[in-house]
Image 1 (cartoon, rainbow, N blue to C red):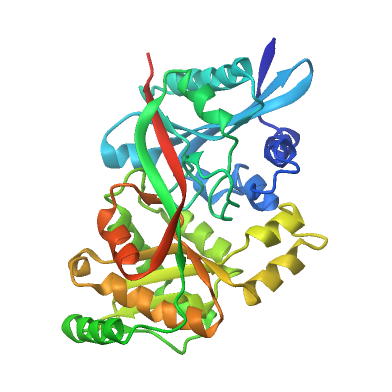
Image 2 (image 1 turned 30 degrees about the horizontal axis):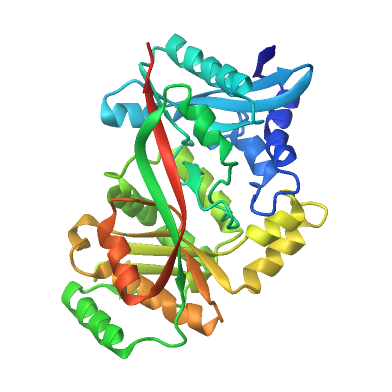
Length: 376
């Protein structure tokens, strides 16, 4: 028999967070989150996402007295307001290969959502688009990126057996960085810059860049990604949390900010040195030695993760996106970067995919899925 318990105390939240790395112990493809960050994100009073953005309930599953699963329900108020709907999200769903355990957890999340007045549930999704999202359904023999979530193949069947159907898929691929820039693309990007009047900000320190442009960059993200599946407007508290999270790992060589003549941000690109191996070595912990692996990965790496590339709506059809990647590409080459992983892109985002796959050598790596179910 499976017993479901609400995770309420600090001890419960710690057990909730620590269950996942225990479940994946010894799996060479799994990359844990930073466990201290996860605890803070799920703790009221510490989490920037629980101030006004969302309601959260975490659940623990026990069988024969042993912890065998976990899962969370999220009601994202910004999302529901934006779409005029009553949706809940399931998040951080992990369990042993046992249908009874999976069903008990999913049912507990659904019942909580119904008690809160919700009529639909979808996921896996986090508090916002910058969190880990989607159930991995293909590409299990590749190491996950730090920003995305690896899961066992059996999750798909056990979740679908509870009446969940596909609502959206994301794909991920890797781009091989060329040894030098193509002169034809360089000339094209120069022409686009002349036509749009956009130029890249260079020469600022990380601190100066954040102070001067962080808010405008997040406005650009809201505008560019606002029409995509699952995205939510970023509240004041969410923005503060995101800026704090990224401060440690930002590298100005891997940031491209385009501004117009009036110093307004027109587009933005962000890549992060791959932290997968470093976080694996530290087992998701910063101390006592985890931070050393992270600092080494930030400076010595041959792979980057393409976290974000976006432009304001008025520049969407101008080629400005290619300017951003082109500028970053030169610095990838200078830093000895050999590969760039795309992270998750919606499968119907054909324009962006065509941009990369037409110009660069790419390889598909993974597919992720978001499910949906009506609550009755």
